[in-house]
Amino acid sequence: MLFFTDEVMRNLLASSLETAELTPDGFRDVGRGPGSMEGEFIDWLTMKDNAASVVADVRRIRHHPLIPKSIPIYGYIYDVRTGRLEEVPGARDAGKAM
Image 1 (cartoon, helix red, strand yellow):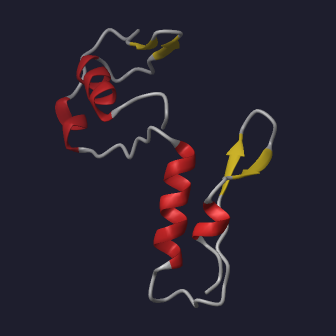
Image 2: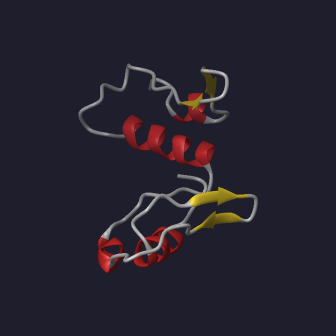
């Protein structure tokens, strides 16, 4: 979800429903069409910063009324290349038990 924006996704779908190619300059439509404008009505939940998104999620969970304050909340990012979980700086503080 880091490699594109809602606008990029909507434009690609408007042109073609085939899988786009990821190039060093971004996504490139390789399909022949037709596409669909229905992508305009979808929030693709893209993100610009994985770590900031994780910290925000941990804060939201930490302050949720159904989560006991005594339970610590942690935040990690899964690295698909290595298969490892990497703890997000700042997430531990954001989710510490109260």
